[in-house]
Structure formats: C-alpha cells, structure tokens
Image (cartoon, rainbow, N blue to C red; front, side):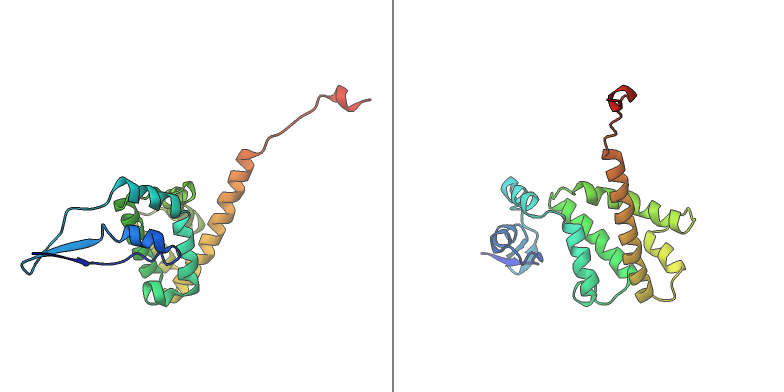
Length: 176
C-alpha cells in the first residue's frame, strides 16, 4: 500500500492553477510506514508553466521580505536573509526555473558591488561584509536594502548608457 503525503508547498498564492500543478512533484511516498522519496513526478510541462508564470521572482520576494521580514525569515536579519536567498536560488535551480537576466546580474555582481562600496576584497559573503559595518543584524538588514537599491540604480543606469544610440550629424546638414 502506498500513501502519498505532501512535504511542503510553494508560496505562490497568486495563482491557484500553478499551485495545483506544482504541488504534484513535492510528495513523499510512504510504504509500510517507511518514508521513501518517490520518483520525481516533475514533468517538462510543470517546468514550462513555472518558467512562464514565475517572472522576476527574486525581486518580488525581496520586496515582500523587506515589507514583512518576520513572515519569510523570522526577523529582520541580514544573515538570515542571505541564507534564505541561497536556499531560494537553490530551490529554483532544482525545480528547473531559469533565472531572469536581472537575477543573474544580482547573483554575479552584487557581492562585487558591496566589496567596492566598502573598499574590500574578500571571499566572505556580502552579508558578512555588511555586518562588519553594522552594530546588529537588524541594522545589517536595513543596510542590505539600501545597498540593493543603490545596486539596482547603478546597474539600470549602466544598462541605459550601453543602450543609448548616439546620432551625429555632419556640420553641412546643420547649415541651411
């Protein structure tokens, strides 16, 4: 006799159709009272649906965490936020959800951005760098979002500058 029980659910309350589709692969098969991880039921359809419907997930979840940290990470803590984001990235990768270009840029360049802000070069995480300059975890949490806002402004400005088309006219066209 096999009994299937859900292990966890995703926080995708905005789309009940996606929830019902995504919950299928997140089950454990229980046979004779011994829990065994069942074969993944995840299909290409589920991955495709998730890729189509989860857009900008990292930035949306960061906005939610900023507004209500207790719900997502327990307390306003930069170290807890860092651990959450590592888990979030891993979960999305395991589910086959492709990161957006903006998310890739954050993962690839935010650490370097924080190092430049504090004139450091270290293998420590950006959370540890922030904590070097903050008296407690809550102050580090606030500082992260200030740095994150600066990072977004800086990188959106760079993107605009690289996409600008400079048109020069010959002097003869200016004279009538």
